Structures are given as C-alpha cells and as structure tokens.
Image 1 (cartoon, one colour):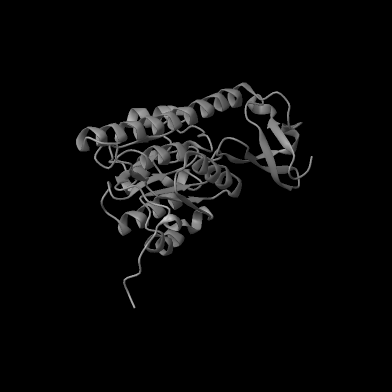
Image 2 (image 1 turned 30 degrees about the horizontal axis):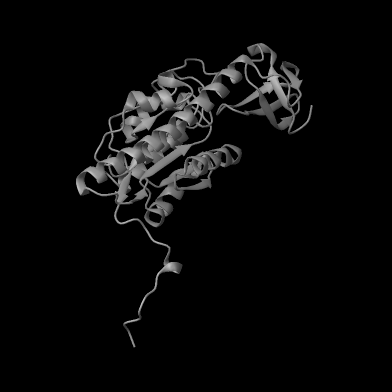
Length: 297
C-alpha cells in the first residue's frame, strides 16, 4: 500500500472508498473519494481496491442521487427561463429577450480535489463561481480579505470535519468535540460581519458531521450536518446552485433544496432565505455587430 492507492476499511464493512494521503508508520491518513471524510486508520484495517471495480452500494446510491440532483437543477433552470420569458411576453405584449444574472458564488474549500469537482459542477450548471483552496484554520482570515474584492451573493465554506472518536466524554453540543467546526464557525462570523443581511449574503457552511446548530447560530443560512452524518462532496454545491437561480423576489424552498442534495435532511439543513437570481432588459448585444456613429471628437 502506498500514497494515492484506493482503499476501504474492513472495520466499517468497506462501505466507503478512500484514497491514501500519507502513511505514518503503521497508520494511514485517508480521504473519501466521494464523501467529505478525512480519517486515519491502522494499515492492517485497509484493503486495497482497484480503480474501476464495482462501487460499494453506498457510493452507488450517492452516484445515482448526484445524477438525479444535477438533472433536476438543470430542468429547474430551463423551466425558470421559459417562465420568465412568458411573463415578459404577457406584460409587454411582445417577445422581449432578456439577460440573466444568477447569484455569484465564492467557494472556499479545505480540499483541492473537492474544490475542482465543485467548480466543474458550477460550470456545468452555469453558476458564476470563484473558488479557492484554503485550509480550514485560515478560512476566516482569507474571507476577511476576499469578500470586499469578490462581492459574492453566496459564500460556501466547506472542507473536512468530523467528531473525534477518542474523546472520554463525547459532548455533541461542544465545538471541542469536532475537528474543524470551530474554524467554520469563525469563518461564518467573519462573513456575517461583512454582510449582516441574510438575504443579501447567503452563507452555506460545514462538512461531514459538522456542528449544524453552532453554524446556524454564527450566521449561516444553510449548514451541515443535522444528523452528524457524512455529507457528499457536492452537497454544498447543490445548495449554492439552488440559491443562485432562485429569483430575488422568491424565498428558496428549503425542502426542495434539501431534496436536491445527496444526503438529504440528515446531511444539510437551513432557514428560509431569498434567492439571488435577477433578469435584465434588453438582452445584451454583440458589440462587434453594432454600427455606431462616433459622437466625440
């Protein structure tokens, strides 16, 4: 077994596939390929798997949910565009083309591989997004510098987290029981100090098993994980995409947005929030085709 190998854990029934990050003596640090889980495990608890082998049932179900979620979001986008055009036609009694201004996302991720997957999905869904790989401990400081420059409508703060397994008394109410929840809370507070209005800046925060209640209390609109479960790598993206394409005159349907996530209401929860999507008139033109008579000497 070496760095980069795909493995599963015998003690967990091989339910999740990991990639080996580092090996230290008889232990390995492993990272979930689809779930936002960073863990360590004894080397003798790991079984190598070959890329392309039949996927585990849990991952198979997650893949199916991910495909369905993407399909629903793309369908929602098409229906919304058609509805906007129909509304304009009715009001203006003619076919008036318009342009769309979806909400802009600033995504900070503590994992470079998950960040790439997230940015690929934003691009597929045509969500304007800016992404940065930032370790969880540095997210608050980086946000303090980035927010005034980026001016996003939606901020995603995610990476790795989890409940410590070797605590003598595990108190799920205490932030000290979690690997990175305190860092996420600090980052949320920084973002909320920048913009206090929950409808002007939508904050999506947390990772696997994160302290859901503390993140909401700090000022997040959506957070993980109410059931302290593993969330899928792309769950925060689905929430952000839904916020990006919900009109500003409407509130995001919380049940609907959670239905679009892979892990559902045990994985992600949130509060009623307005969307960030706007339309504009007239439709933007191709300036290279305009015949303009100069008016300035």
